[in-house]
Length: 130
Image (cartoon, rainbow, N blue to C red):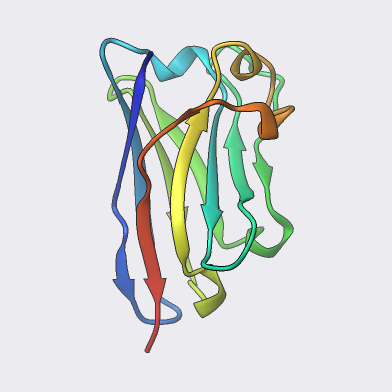
């Protein structure tokens, strides 16, 4: 079972930026799979924030939650086996634990069925507060 590891969270003021990173251990190559970012705030349901198709799926489009469109950008660097979530103009409503996820079967599809993703990292906390 591959392990995903998130990093880059922290405490920032509204309007500032953070970049989250998702890497994998155990020789698991992220390039073959769609990678999604989810978040969950206290007392709220987990929601999919963004997803990037696999590197081989050149026709696939990234997915963004409506509330983060134009502020968050997902990308991947296959040489570093890392997927990034660049978060700009952060708002207090973005405060949550952020998780990256994929799936050995669903991850082969172009960012579909995100709720079926079963391989998760441990999460990184993002707090936006003045």
